[in-house]
Amino acid sequence: MATPTPALSALIRAARVIDPASGLDQINDVAVSDGSIQAIKPNLDLAGYDRVIDAEGMILSPGLIDPHVHLREPGQTHKEDIESGTRAAVAGGFTTVCCMPNTSPALDAPEMVEFVRSRAEQAGHCRVFSVAAATKGRKGERLAEIGLCLDAGAVAYSDDGDVVESASMMKSVLQAVKQTGKCFMQHCQELTLTNGAAMHAGTVSAKLGLKGWPREAEEIIIERDIRLNKAIGCHYHIQHMSSGNSVEIVARAQREGIPVTCEASPHHLLLTHEAIETHGTMAKMNPPLREQSDIDALKQGIADGIITILATDHAPHTNDEKRNTMSDAPFGIIGLESALGLYHKALVEPGVIGWPKLIELLTINPARLCGLDSMGLGSITVGGPADLTLIDPECSWTLKESDLMGKSQNTPFLGWNMGTRSVMTMVGGQIRTERAISSVV
Ligand SMILES: [Zn+2]
Image 1 (tube, rainbow, N blue to C red):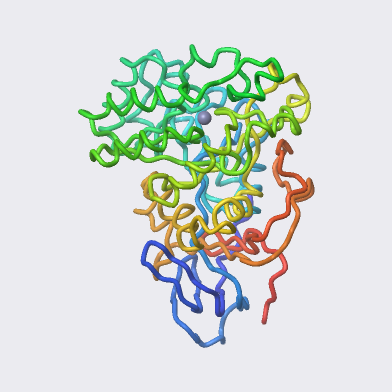
Image 2 (tube, rainbow, N blue to C red):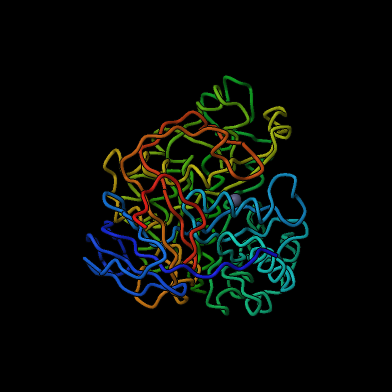
């Protein structure tokens, strides 16, 4: 059990405080004590704090929230565990992560949700909430213990890693999740179109002689689920959207008033299927990397407010596993330490969105998706929890293996230069990571 350290009293001085939930974007001091925010005002008295942090030139954001990570515990702790995954999270500026249920056994029962909660508390790095399985064992055959998992603290439901394949089961899932008031997160993959495929169906798969994974595999499931959900009205959320066409399908449903949201991941905004030729299995993702036209459409979807959430899909695998052939290697890459720099590169540097919008997509929007805003997460509010991320908005650093705090190093982004980074992560008033910031006291 980690020793509980007393909550710090701290003054973060002269930061650009961006809180999209309240519309605040102003130079301010933020005072923290007993785990919560005490004041947000310019020129607070510096006396009487354990720490005064000079944050001139820095952005102070609500603690970043990642609604889609794989922590691999229980069952695959050689890849990652709750301790190592949350250590990576705070290193990347995340104060809250929501973990997916594709563990072994699956997170499909209240005792599993309780297990994750207690392991996260022992680790003591950041907040962890469970996305519980929608079907027992994620097999798509019968409903999981959805109501009991809600009572145990599940914040959403998903069979991620797998799609809910049967339309009839999907209808039951949407009806059951609707009763909880939570959202269902779909991994959109039509299986008969993707069986044996390792990458996007296009010129590169043809050249390499690999079976291709068409965009329609994603689009068909989204279309089906939206149609099923029309009469049910469950909050339906699309995970890791990869196809540009999916944006238009979602936009249409949103215009009709059907409750649909979606997320994008760093790799789908920065890499195309051509990355397979240089990075091999390190660029093997589910859903796969697609084409520049898809990247452009996803970015436009973000600019237009159709895609409202960013999520890493942090998916650790060992180097040995990734050294397999394209067909045999597992899908996915890690993402927590590089996410902020990569989102900035994809979205802020080219002027798709500005800092306040980026922070909105990383804080209050995922908080609302998972109902965490009711706990005060995702915003900077007097009296609310002191979950804060201090960001250097103009720096230059290169992602190296030594920056990776989790157990696995599977990322094609090693060696990439980034122009922003979190410099301090505070969870419940306690500093969990800190790098190169000046302290007055
Ligand atoms: Zn998935």
